[in-house]
Length: 254
Image 1 (tube, rainbow, N blue to C red):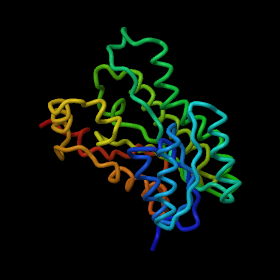
Image 2: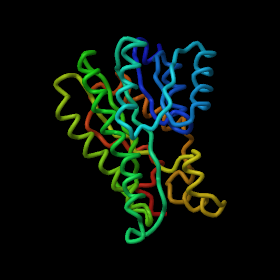
Image 3: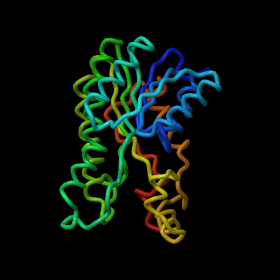
Image 4: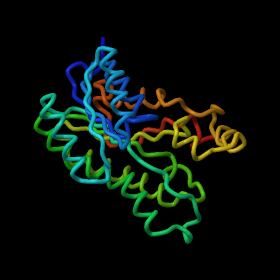
């Protein structure tokens, strides 16, 4: 039986990587989708792919750091599909890599806005819609970076992703009585365009792979399957958590 029949979901950062695979997976499980990202052509291709597979999705291109985009995503879900049950706040960026004293304030703000402020803005509009619906599940893509590991050169990214975890805990406490769950998903190294950009050489990729107990990177679909668990009734008693899906990178010492 499909896990998300009758559900309406927003997925941000859906033009590639984890968001793309989550959107396709959720659609295959019966959800109707509003997908967001900056690249309109990629979103249109995703919507077409979902439609050809028998699903239903609509795209809204835009910068998720902008409050108007967050608001319009929820309005689209309500106007097009009648409400909102699930939100995967997945959009993010790593920013420039440099020791903290060398980071520009502009880069710091850009990374924090891309990863943390975007999550705040999403939740700001998603929560009232879920209250009106009688409940829902919010998922925020965080990272093991800033939670169980500190990677040199990633201070802004680590701070933003750690901030998502704190926000998730507060949302869970504030809205649990209204049947709304909030959880952070913490992937390990994943074979996405952003991940490949961070490991441009075979040597750097092999090093990152070696950090994981499984000695490989995740495929985006593997992370999407974890998001499906958090979105579905299979996780009905799971809220306020930091769910590691990291191939053992947090515990590996070999």
